[in-house]
Length: 484
Image (cartoon, rainbow, N blue to C red; front, side, top):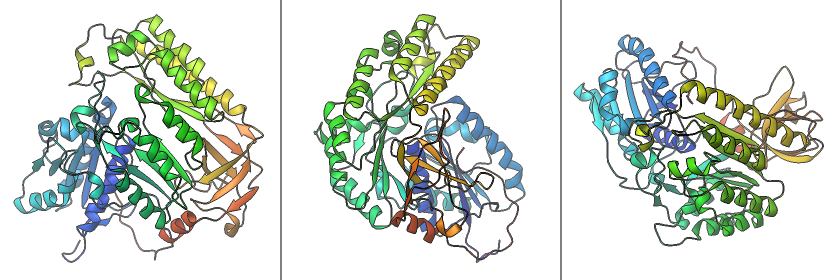
């Protein structure tokens, strides 16, 4: 790299949708500071890891990748490595002890400091650590380089006021801070003007939105207000907490046409005893009652969940209670996790930690049940017509089967047969009506092709962003995925 060439960057993301959106902000900040995104096979001058602290495997992957980069950095003068996010907030000193070749460590509350810290580390030729203990300003004010031209994350709150014993997020993200509704809607309107037609509202607990400014009905009002935004075709949100899921939110979902009939609501366990130990302030019967109300208002809603297997003290009877709730709830999908000790959480020091072999056996039984239920739920949809929005990444053309993929309104993944003629194919962001012809546990097929195709402003925005660029030689790169 010559002195007059801009430095390049790559952001590698671990964890939840909030982290993905934070990585968009990191990219926007680096763009604003004069950096350029590294080409797909290019060795970046700056590699930023945006970390997660929820599960142990994220730690292992981070340190594995840092170890892989150590010799690369040694052979590339001027290269810098930064580590941010939840694990940086938690393990601020440990990171440099384990990986002293890291240049910058920054926390969840000071993402905006990254360009300054990189420059300071380069000038001073020593590592920089900056971890703020609380949020100084809502991060939506930061510049953002959005991954998608037609779909966007919109944060409505950060932080969490719950005290779940397995979760370290409140300690790392802080107490809940809410944006004002006008700011949220203003951002959505701006995005729609740029071609975005689907937004996902983000918060650690979206249905307590408004607690900071004293309006317990604020989230339902916000959902209804999105229905007034012309050109906004789809609205989703994640994640709600069952203890705060109220009837006004269900009514707003059912009565606002662009709010999608899909709901991700974490169960965590079907055992009341385990829920008490987790400090989850709802019980299995109440959880199922919410699902019944959602399905009464939206019969075709797809409901997904999170479940933890092997929480300390979980007995076979407790686990069977989880299986019973899963069977009754008929989830369209479930994200299942084996409990792992996370230092700094109350659950880490609880007695009666479940043996790993027992956790694995229970986990396998749960995965089998979830897969069977998902398959039956999908099979019941064969023959129905659905609207699919084709998706970037998922929307890549499969040359072997001539299919493209997208999401139905209920968020199910659908693979669609598309025409051979490139001019007749949908683009990511475009919409099509299709008939479902085949069901698998985790996807559906529409092998009859497009019944109708709607070219959208979102598809136009995708096409403009992905217009062919001049081809040139690309150096061999590091091979790190952007989403770890």
